[in-house]
Image (tube, rainbow, N blue to C red; front, side, top):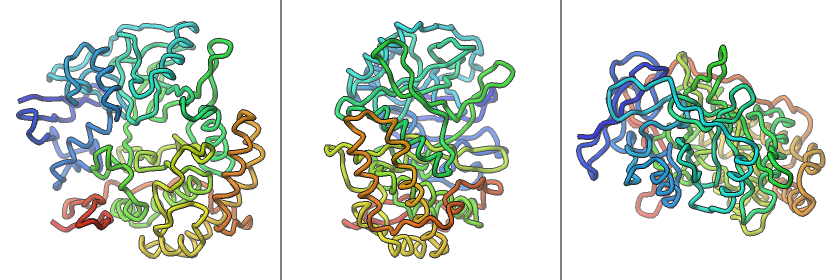
Length: 441
C-alpha cells in the first residue's frame, strides 16, 4: 500500500492510497467537515472511481518527456503520480507528503540572479515537450503542455519554489512554433480586462537584453505579513473528475449544468458564459476545460481570475476550430446569436440574457482591438487584428449594454447538495458525444 498524505496550511486533510501500480487510486478525508479538496471528491456522498486519480493527474505536466525530466530533477526513478507530487509546490492550496509527518515550513531558499533567470527562459523555450526546468533546485509541478516554469518572489528576490516556499509567479517564454506568443498572450489578457473581465496580474519580464517572457502572478497565492500562503483552487477538468486527456471533451453545456448544482441562482453559470464569450470573440480556439478555474473557499466557490488567454488564430498553423463549440458550430466566425440562444436553452439559462452577453462581449473586443494590437510585435499584429475581426463576423456585435459583459462576484452558497447525486462527466458512447449530467444515487 502506498500513501500520499494531503495537507493544507499544516493541517492534515486526508490520504490518497493505492494498493499496487495498476489498482484504483482511493481517497479518504480525515473527517466530513470543511471545504472539499475538489468538487469531484465531496466530503459527503459518492464520487466516481476515476476521480481521485484524475485529481492528481491534473496537477502534473501532460508531456511524458516533461514528466521524465521532472523525475530526474526530483531524484526519483519513475513518473508515477505519487512519486512526482510528493514534496513539491503544486497548483492550489495543498501539499503532498509520502508519510503522515507534517511537512517542514523551513525550506532551502535558492535565489536566481538575472543571468540565471535569462538562462532558464532560453532553456525552457528550447526544450519543447521536455520543458521541465533543468536545475536540481526546481521542485514544482505545473499542469498543461506549454513550456513554462514557476518562481517565488520574496521581497524582490526570485527564488526557486518548493514545498516550504510557495511560488508566486508563472513565466512562459514564447512557443517556438508561435513566434510572439508571449506578447500576444499579454495583449489578450489586457483585452480581457478592457472588456470588464477579471484577469490575473500579468506583463513581460526581461532579465537580460533580448531575453524576455510573459509573466503572470498566481491567483492561488497570497502574501500575508511577509508570508506566502497557498489558496485552494481547481480547474473545471479536475472539478468534473476528468483526466487531462479529456480536457477537450468538456463542453459548455456540461459546465453550466455542473455549476448549477452548486449555485441554483446560476450566477456562476452566467459568469462562465461571459468568459466563454470572450474566449470565442478573442480568437482563442484552444480554450478547453483546464482554462477555467474555481476558487474553493470555506463558504463556497467562485471563479478565479482569468488566465491562459491568447488569440491562437493569430498563427495559421494552430487549430482553427473551437475547443468548446457553441451549438456545435465548429468555427467562431460561424457562431450566430441563435447559437448562443440554443446553448442557453440546453443549459437552462435565459436565452435573451446569454445572447446579449455574447453580442456585447464581441462589441467590446472589437472596440479595444486596435488598443491592444499595439502591444504585439509587428510581425503578428496584422494577423491578430484580422483574426479578431473575422471571428466576430456573424455574432452581430452590439455596444448598448457593456455592463452585461463585465464579471460579477458570483459565488455559491456553500457546496450544494451533492450527497444524493454523482456527476457523470462528458464522454463518448457508441460514437456519440454525451454531455455531462448529475445522476441520482
